[in-house]
Image (cartoon, rainbow, N blue to C red; front, side, top):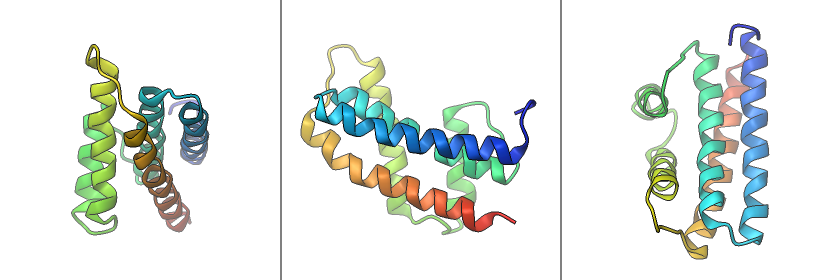
Amino acid sequence: MTNFSQEEYIAYRIKRARESIEEVETHLNNGYWNTAVNRMYYACFYAVTALLAQNHIVTGSHSGVRQKFGELYVKTSVIDRETAKLFTELFEKRQKGDYNDFFDFDENTARILYPGAKSFIEKIELLVNNQKG
């Protein structure tokens, strides 16, 4: 974040989240289930990193992002557990899809996750916008 202001970084991460979730529809329409799941996870990840950055929290890993998100937003009930569970599920599925050989998600799995991922990003973006000021 050294070359950018905090506000620029947050706006950039939210933009990346929106772009990534929009990409998912193309992957779903073309049958790229693993890529769709990957992009859903990253869209959510970008949104969460924007939220953390808004509170001056920088982590060095995906696990660190998940841990801080849980600690600061889920345990405090700012984000409900069901919403947070989706982020964890997408993380685990992305790991499996990216790193397990001979593993492919099916259409049903990818399409079921998509509305939740879109909703997750909307909730995080709303939280980011409400915390501005």
